[in-house]
Amino acid sequence: MSKLFKRHSKWPTQLNGGLSKRSFLKKGSIATVGLLLIACGSGKKTSKDKTSGSQKDGSTSGNGPVMAIVSADLIVNDVTQRLAFAIMDKFQPQNVGNLNVDVLTPSGKKSSYKAKYQDSGIKNKGIYTVQILLNEKGNYKIEANNESAKFGSNIITKDAPFAPYIGDKAIEVSTPTLKDTQGVDPICTQKPTCSHHSVDLKETLGSKPTVILFATPARCQTAYCGNVLDSAIKVSKKYATIEFIHNEIYKNLTTNEVIDSVKAWDLPSEPWIFAINKDKKVTARLDGAFTENEINELFKTLQN
Image (cartoon, rainbow, N blue to C red; front, side, top):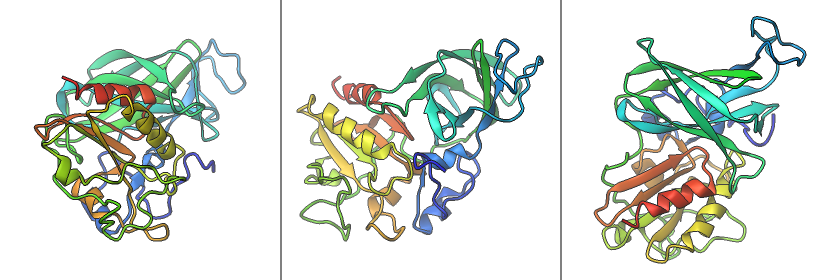
């Protein structure tokens, strides 16, 4: 299996809608985006595609690219939400051109959207993103398609999010710092260590707008965590009035013991990034895999 989405042996087999995540955190491990790729749908060649394995009725022999849902915390909401997914072939993300996304609700209603391919800051590991309406609870069928192929998968919505949602109060918890590591060693697994571990989240909340990234470059089971940290550091330099904090996931390099601040934020997966205003409210959040451009837009929500 590719290192890009290598699965940890202690990860559960389902996350989106089917995991009791709190009991999972008690076991001291946390899922990454790689976990979400287990339930991928198969790519289906259309009759216009002359590639071997395609059938006239649009069915497939089961080989070829698949759709991998990246978003981990989708809820019932009357406001559109970000759905991120990758088109994977032999465990490598692919750019297959523009994609239409058809969404079938649990009650059978259909809506259509346009997905955007993005790879800023994550070159060769691009993702598709689309804002979709998920206003029913249950199992949604998702189909991404263009003139040459179809890709299918499913998502399950919940009544409430695991992690703090937009408009929610941020979790006021102390985060490890260079002065108080809280037993976390190393405090940063990036090489060299990044410079965003000097401020405690609890102390800065309310005094200035803050962005916090939960990610572990060294122990990430995907190839995204290091990329998103690099991108977040780059973007943060453009916003001098915004505090940027990096929070690791695990207490050390060998065990699966999760840092207390990660547990407090109730994260179902990693990486995650949150923007928090001076009122201590979340203004934006991203999870799973996200691009430099998306991180920049997240920072922008704190300028108003």
